[in-house]
Amino acid sequence: MRGNILGIFFSILSGVLIFLIVVAYGRSDRSAPEFRFSATDIIYDSQTTDNDLKAGVNAYDSKDGDLTGRIVVEKVVLNREKETAVVYYAVADYSGNVTKQSRVFPADIADIDNFGDSSETMEDPVFPFVAQPEGEEVTGTQEPVLGEQQTGTDTANNENGTGNQEP
Image 1 (cartoon, rainbow, N blue to C red):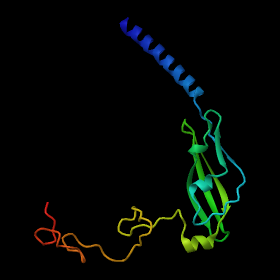
Image 2 (image 1 turned 180 degrees about the vertical axis):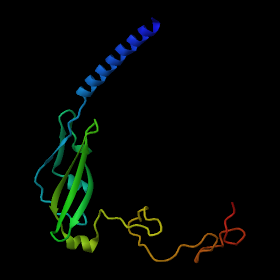
Image 3 (image 1 turned 120 degrees about the horizontal axis):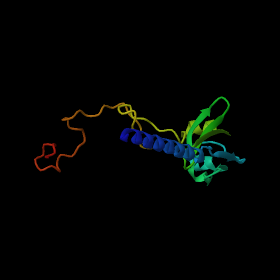
Image 4 (image 1 turned 90 degrees about the vertical axis):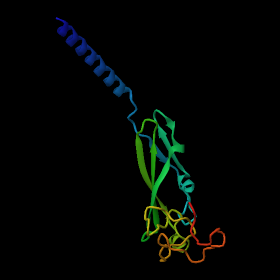
């Protein structure tokens, strides 16, 4: 008798929980935001920033409203033959719905070749996943091995003059 009552209770509880989940799912925001583009006369070159590329781009969501401040530039792909740059945008609303769009701009390939693309970073050949700071060049010189003294180091500052640091 007691087992039957617990079985009925848990069956009713399961039914109530299923009903609440269905209601919550039905009320959730599942609509993705939308982009709105307005005409701009931007030419992509070495000085173009992400903020320049976001000019004239707005994002709206039916529930969250204006999401323009949440727009990010994912990547820029250059087409050297057509002298264009394809810019990929993304925006997410507060419920996690994501929309991605692309836009094509004319590109000044000669300027990019002469001054470099502002979005490119040079990689260190020893540690390829660490970006090289701007202005530094990667050279073919080998780093000193642990324990070797580097040329040009000042040993006069050490008390014992050995060039080794004490712990």
